[in-house]
Each structure stands twice: as C-alpha cells, then as structure tokens.
Length: 134
Image (cartoon, rainbow, N blue to C red; front, side):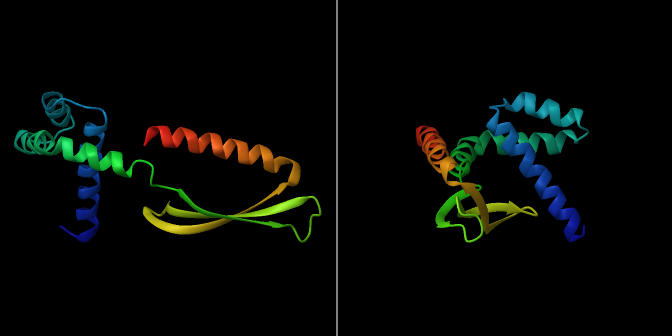
C-alpha cells in the first residue's frame, strides 16, 4: 500500500469512528452499517470493538477539540489610510484549516466606523454563546 492509499484509509477510518462517536451510534448498528458499505465482517467487528472500548475517550477528545478550529487569536484596529470614515481590522486566526492542515492566518477587513459598534456587539454575543458551550 502506498502512502496516499494509507492516508486515505486512515482518513476514512477516522471519519467513520468520529461520526459514530458524535452521534452516539450503538456498536451493533455501527457494525451493520459498515457491513452494508461492504466491509468484511471481521473488519467491522474490529472497528466495533474499538468503538466500544474507546468511545468515551474519543468523546472527551472531540469535545476538547470542538471549538478550536478557526479560533480568533488577536484583532488589530487601525484607521483606514484611504477611506476617511472606515477602519481596517486585522484578524489573526489560529488553526484555520487550509488544504486539510491547521495553519495560523491573518485576514484584513475594512468596515465603516458606524458599523463597528454593531460588529462588537455581535462578536460579544457570539463569545457568550461559545462560553456557554464550553
């Protein structure tokens, strides 16, 4: 098996197991679904044993990682040099997924000064929702 095939197989297994854990799929149903997809009975049984043994640890791991993608790291606000009534926002994003890999990125946004209080209010509201989830 070449490297590309191994990565594809691993990604498929990861998707199947994380989906089963996220949706609290019982092992018997998971096994039946895998067999309907054409996976041999022995392989389905092995994945179900893995799901049964590690589902709690996988659930804990998924919960700890659930809000870490595209995490806002920092914000810089400066007056626009070209537009008099606008401000430039530089948003630093941690763990933005690009080509399947988490990377640190920076995005620039120009908005009118009158829109800034609305944006701040919306961001605070979003932060409150996220804090309730964690």
